[in-house]
Length: 151
Image (cartoon, rainbow, N blue to C red; front, side, top):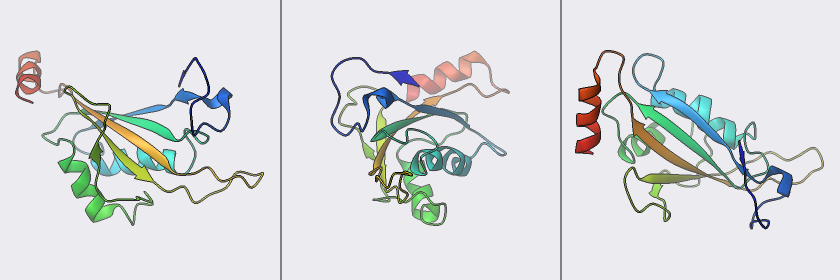
């Protein structure tokens, strides 16, 4: 978690929790799937394990496959978003207004149905998604440079 300095931002419940929580995952083969990215990453924000008092969080993926945003995540949400407990407000991720260069950052919005012990409601959470090409164990650095240059 990174703590932010300056005045309290809109939507922040308590300034002590004003930070950026980032969950990083590898998206590759085997058990490192988009499903794992969602059920062991996104869900942690939705259910309040991460950023429970924040209106946003961030997922960073190191991608070792040909999957790209937004297509791969939109396809996954359409097929699995409801059953995986992602509580999506929309099945589509959208390009963040903060993104001007590559790699682009996309956002997804999620309901949070739980309450704090004092009865307070956490509100929805916006998750920003940044996917970076990563070197596969079997490939060399020249393949990674080629992948970065073509995206």
